[in-house]
Image (cartoon, rainbow, N blue to C red; front, side, top):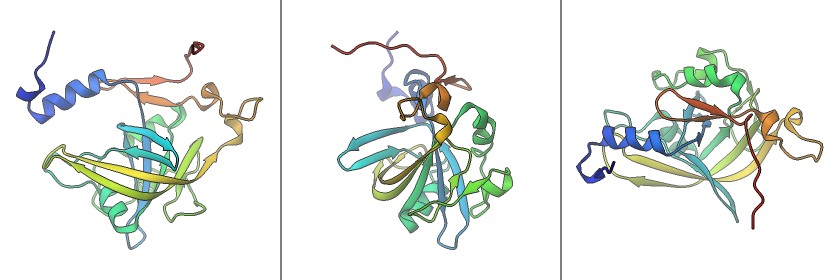
Length: 201
């Protein structure tokens, strides 16, 4: 099978991309509006970028109507956000926060998700997340226009919170203990509980 993306509508291209680019880690991003209203939303186009300086990126695409999502609006206004990683025990709560709520309505409050204060930024972190990155906006790169166009958000990592319970005997994060989830195609997910090792040449 061979697919010419030049002939696909955005929704069709998106469907093929999320069905083939996998597994995709989930960034559960907390932000605050200028007047202090919290927001929490998941994004599966997410990755680390570089350690010099420590930087990550995630990609909120525009809504079907072509508008920027609340996460982008808040980051543009405040320049801060927190990326929480999602363990299996929080997958249902994470999924709930993908619902569209009116701007300013808090997913933390609506879905009963406990928050913990951050150290260097205003947005809170998810209290039960095994890892949370406090970030300052580096830049937003816009790709495309209208529905499903991308807002690639780059953030400088200022601080990371790692739960003691997910550390191994060597003092480093243990993937099995973190039990993180990742997106597959459609409604599918994967977990980090099944792994293998391969020595690099």
